[in-house]
Length: 349
Image (tube, rainbow, N blue to C red):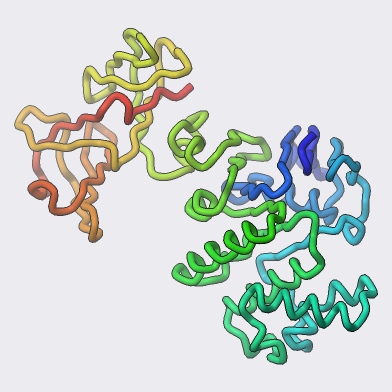
């Protein structure tokens, strides 16, 4: 059994047609950083709140380190929570905010002082222990919330979109800091986010969810390079999805007839036959000017390190990302051919 085990968890609210979370089974190892990723309404926050004990599961069981927690109250689960809005006390200073959980557990004053000091040093806020919350920046408030969750030495750290209120640059810095702290402490962590870049950057594994159902569980590389289906492929990273007919497969590579492009090849690890969807990431496509091309360049966007082309092929637009300066830049209206290496395309089930 994994350290944190969700066994066939279901959450269904009265008056709804379908469950918010349906038959979710997941094991998380001790010290692992797992992200629940998906669009709004997919059930990721509901799942986290059932782990925390803030919401009671309709059915199923939750185990932590071999002990069933399914009906255990939230204050007895020993978990640290960081919410999207941080939920800090504005009338208390930084140190008292961090100390709150320890004081509720009736820790001695000496222990509270020691552990609060250690937690604030961990998040680099020791010099601001006497500040009021309203005097802090968004990033500093996020660190206070993290210190408050960590100071109780939780068995599991639960993070519910804690970076969504920060600007892009600070968000990137804070996700790296959270990951560094988690690695240092070895705390088992469940991180809820709708941001695919966050999930790819910090996770040991990612759980991709849609409409209450787990679509795929895997490492960031597995999720990105080998998505299980069309939903995962389109949700994680940018994707070109082509309709194709598989003509022949040998040694895991399929010969295809791709709509609008003609004969192509792609990895076919599932051994699919007949009609199929083929995934090719924009940066793995090649584009070249040709009089007898597949399509026409509609848009050209320079984004520094790369140039992004929108190529019209029939009724669809194909995205291609090329390294800036490597070849001559194509102009709008140019007739072009599209291609890819077989190992850079994937047949989806």
